[in-house]
Length: 165
Image (cartoon, rainbow, N blue to C red; front, side, top):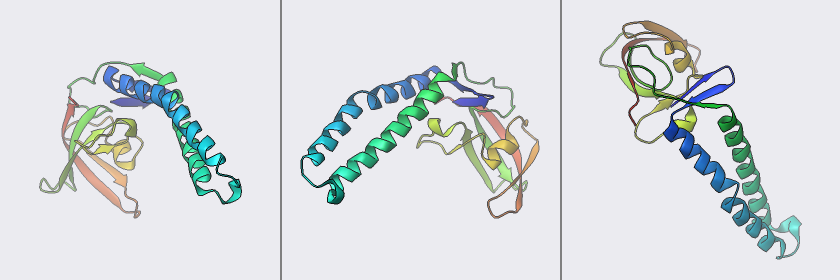
């Protein structure tokens, strides 16, 4: 679970460890693997028409961008506990909202950084329009946000519980 305030990103110990392990892999074994791919492709000859070489260089660029992203995230990370179970929506909470006050039209999601997204529950970033609108609200409150089509949507917060994943 993460919470961004100012430049700090709040992470659970589990999330921190997971991201640190990914960084160690990408900046160690993965760098060696991609360097070998580039070298093997380079030995094939003319680099201008060498698809394998260009694909490996592109993969290397993406990998290095992810390394920089992880380094920055972990450098500014503050490791802490899950938020309190007080009904206030904040990053690290599983939130259930009803659209336009209709209890039959509802969704449940984890309010957290995309770094913490998992397949078990949909994740909305605190910076997303919906995330920004519900962050800091309490169960029973109504929040409004602008949808991608420019229309305004209203949601009622039905439940907010700390994520236990």
